Image 1 (cartoon, rainbow, N blue to C red):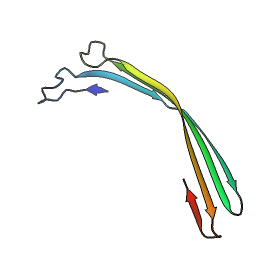
Image 2 (image 1 turned 30 degrees about the vertical axis):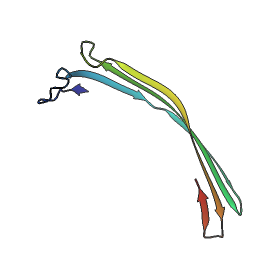
Image 3 (image 1 turned 135 degrees about the horizontal axis):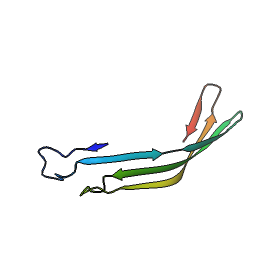
Length: 92
């Protein structure tokens, strides 16, 4: 990645330089489905881990090397009532 300062910008005139960026984003997914004559239930869980790292030129006057990481679960739920064989009412 190459930072290039704006030619006609008075802001951050020394913003040029190099930076390396890397990311790691593994995730695991799981879904449970239940269905009978009158109802459908679908419940899911995704767990995601994110690790981001920026390695910036150590002599750069504005930007510094940094990064962050987190692990977070994301859930979903869908419930449907089957009114007849051709129609269902879903709630998310």
